[in-house]
Length: 230
Image 1 (tube, rainbow, N blue to C red):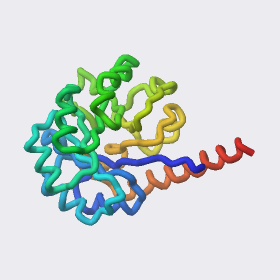
Image 2 (image 1 turned 90 degrees about the vertical axis):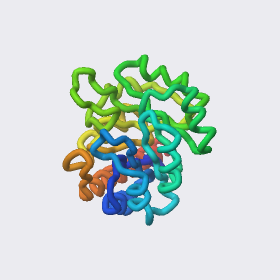
Image 3 (image 1 turned 60 degrees about the vertical axis):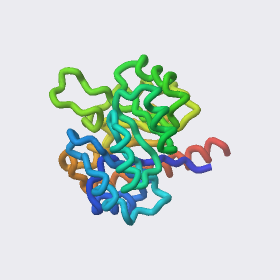
């Protein structure tokens, strides 16, 4: 059996960057609807950028404590497959969103310690997918809920087991993706700043090189798995 890694390029802001992600082999496309972020887009802009993306590639709407009106606008313009909640949404609020819009929920967990990872228990009944990102440092001025280009201690996930799918995020780039996968055992990663020239400006060559590296690593692991069985 082959070894595969899902890749979500997040913070896409243009049709050009979407096309690059699709061509490179992304499995998920992330669009941020949070105005303080330099990667934020309007529902209409996201719909235009993703218009020609194949439906097999999951479109993900990323929100921070959203109201229903914003989510509805995004659903109408983007037709997302997944709603990612990256704020302080309570399990009750997440359940309301999930029921109202009838879409899978990806809940972001901000990690600084093992206790943060254990907190997923409270979301087990209302979330379908988890995403582990670095908790923004309190001392950092104007830090965002995510996409700050910082990583957490990946070894916290070394023995992590979960019945639901989950993504690894936070400071992942070409130079550390091999360690990220090796340490955590993750089979899904979320990348934003790691393929940018500056916040909100994706570099298509970095997107391409990142996916090439992923393909190399998955091929190596598949070969090792087959060798172990011989």
